[in-house]
Image (cartoon, rainbow, N blue to C red; front, side):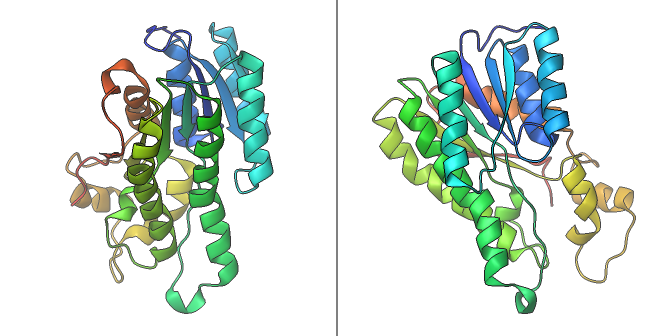
Length: 257
C-alpha cells in the first residue's frame, strides 16, 4: 500500500466496506493515511480479511458489524468508531441494496426494506456522524445514476437514491454552519457482484444483447467502471481539494447515454 498522505490523521467510517465500492473506498482511504473503520453486515470474513490486509500494509484499520437498516446498530457503529480512534472526520456511506420489480408486484415490505437501507440508513449514519464531527468533517453518501435515468422496473431503487440527493442538498446548509460538508457520489454500472447479478435487467424491454455489446452501446468508454475508479470520487470529496464543495452529487458514470 502506497501512502499518499492526503488523509493523514483522519478517521474514516466506511459503511458497506466489506466488498464492492465500499471495500475500494476503505482501501483508498487507508492508502491516503486515514484510520479506517470498515462497517459490514453479512460479509464478516471479507471485512476482517480486508482489515487485516490494510493493517499489514501499515494502516490502522478495524472491522465492525452493523446493519444500517437498524437505527441502533448504525448509532453503535459510529460511536464505537469515534471512541476507538478518539475522533471522527469522514463518513463514506456505501451500504446499499438493489431492487427490481414492476408496480403491480411492489409491496409495502419491499418499500420499507429498500428505504430502510438506502435512504433512512444513510440519513441516520449522517446524523450520528455529524454529532461526532468537528469543523472540517466530511460526509459522503451514495446515490446512483439510476436517480436520473429511466430504467424498466427500477422505480423503488431509483426513488430511494433520488431521496439521497435531496438530503445532501438540504443538509448542506444545516451542516455548513458547523464547517461540515456533505455530498453524494452517484456511480453508474460498476464491476461489483451486485451489478453482475442484475446486469441483464438494465436493458430496455425486448432488448437481449450480450453484456459486452450492451455496454459498448451504452457507455462512452465502452465499459463499466471498476470499484477503484469510483472510489477516487470518495477520496476527492474527503480531501482538501473539495473543501468548498457541498450539497452536490458527483456522477461517476462514464457518460452513459
